Length: 433
Ligand code: PLP
Image 1 (cartoon, rainbow, N blue to C red):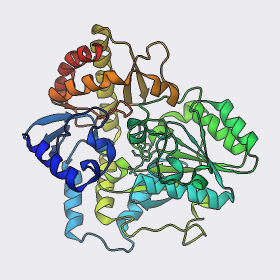
Image 2 (image 1 turned 90 degrees about the vertical axis):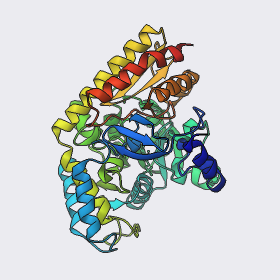
Image 3 (image 1 turned 135 degrees about the vertical axis):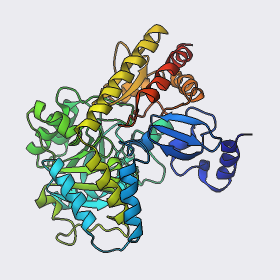
């Protein structure tokens, strides 16, 4: 028996499903998840001594690759000064300044510990600011496990094929309107049906949790237009895309070409903590100042702005220069070409869905593409399991769900890419059968 299997058996006795986050249990692809003991650059090592090229990157934070020396040095220095003070520190201001510098419309920042907290707080703030109750989200978008945002959510909720979550009250669900993504008519209709009642529209900057879906026909700009017309806030969730697809996130990558739209609030996470638990919300100063202590909307956190997390985030973002993004973009293009070539050769019906350097495969969608959650669910998901396991057997660690994006890093060098690319033909063959 492998050490991973032994540990998984033990874990299942003391933790639901043996995990602390559902997708890690490999339910949709089956098999035993490798237990990871270390990670360096583009590689993971498991407790059985197997090495994998990593295409998950801790679900996004590992933009520079794992254990980047500059990040580790900053963390070590910070650790020497103490772990948590529960008081204000220089690092919090420095990271907030960096985020404000990089993302034009962001004037003020509040640090929290997870993306879930960031979106939860953004909703409360939007309701407090507008005095309205309803919120719009799009089916297939995932914004963390906030009660009101779990309806038709992507990520693990999609992977487990759940409609939402038990334990969310009817009263809470009834305050969230769920609309199809990429559908401006449905958005306009919802505002027409609920005049003066909608506080905010929250959207992933580009959906990456039902697989990747590209915002079409300037969909983000359209959300901005409609929300502005109706006095509602636009919350752009960049927890996953922020500082990954561009120095200023998906907003930075796309807004100018689309007429220069500006959301009221942003949410960030993943990359900004460099692998430690930090996330943030930020945006217009007049809205942000509605947060306590300057305003009436309460939010707080024992470990918010934790000094070690600030050090990791600052070091990561300082190293995330134009060259790092160019490297990731180039590696992403190289990998997409290789995936296309392997799947074409094996005669597989698929499309590749893209948002900047993030992408995913959707099987059986060559003729239709994927424009929303209904399309994403209609794909031939069963083809991903043999594809995933063929890659894993060849030492490539893909997301254990077809509904997740593939994450490259600036540390994916020629030899890591060669290992991925040489594993693709057999995986494509497995997907074809
Ligand atoms: N928003 C988006 C777009 C995400 O992808 C995620 C997590 O994957 C979240 C919010 C929630 O972040 P966290 O898992 O840190 O709570």
